Length: 118
Image (tube, rainbow, N blue to C red; front, side, top):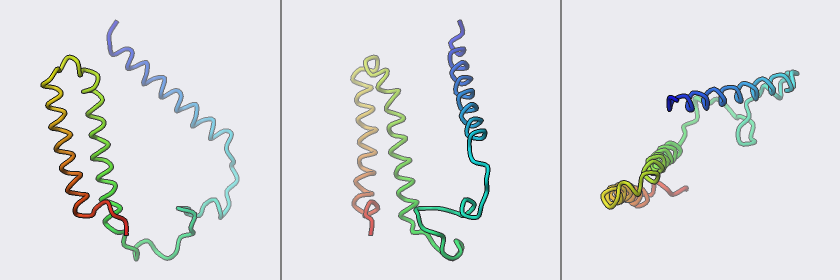
């Protein structure tokens, strides 16, 4: 059996489940529209003014970028953990260097105050 068959079956099952969930929410969900449901809603506060006049602080974007960087670190650690025994000491040293580089980056970001909320 081709090893990609299992992957294709998994994708097909995911697509079927997602389709069933979307279809069920469309069939069973409320269909009545009104002004309150159409209004923009975020953080429990009604919108005030135009979005064009408001400037968001860079800290929001910086936090998002830092989250992505450290989230990708974990993504690289999963395959490494699966083949850890076959890699031996060289694999451990390579991951230690990888984590050390990210640790230096985290220390720098922490030192310049990028993780502080004012």
